[in-house]
Image 1 (spheres, rainbow, N blue to C red):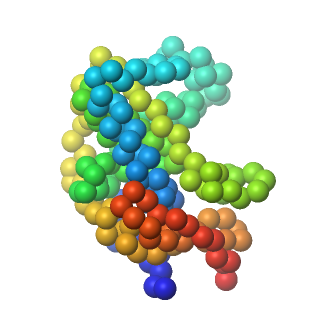
Image 2: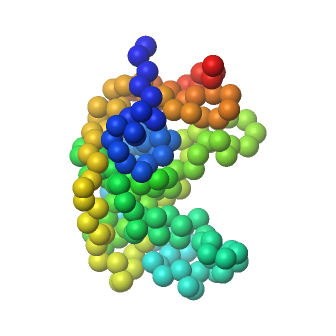
Amino acid sequence: MKQILMEKFVDKLGCEVYPITFIKFLLNKGRILSYFSKASNSNFEIRGTKYLIDHSDCKICKTKDGDMLCRKHTSIERVLNAKDVAFDVQTETLFYKNEIFKMVGNKLVIVYCPHPKLINGEITDKKVRKINPITIEDPNLISLKDYAPLKLFNSGDLLDQYMKCWFNNEFSLITIPVDYNGSDWCLIGNN
């Protein structure tokens, strides 16, 4: 089984995306695309906290020290100020650091991909695949900025490969091709 290092893929692409973000997309592709699809539905309604671009009224941000923002507003700020963004030509999805995102009509959908090195306790499929979506509907956000030049890639090509990236001090994670909607995974020991 030939393994392709995701870190080398990122370097070659020349984007500012963490390797685990691409891996999380491959593990959750169908699920992530369903978030975009749901946001495009005219009956879609944001449940829970309705985040805006401006974080000045955010209760969680107000509890943070200094210039720190809550996790949701950190993702929003990153996306709005991103440089060296990757673009999946197959799904028309954007990638930057830990964020996978797309403007869907007048809504910005961001999927935050926490690194699995943050996993506590037993390593489970649910914990490895964990992603956190947020949808922002703000009248002050009409469209995203022009991220040109985008770093283009095709996620379909990656789904057919065994992609490998650093998981934690003990293991590396390898994707296992399954189908168009996502990959499976396994861990191998680091040498």
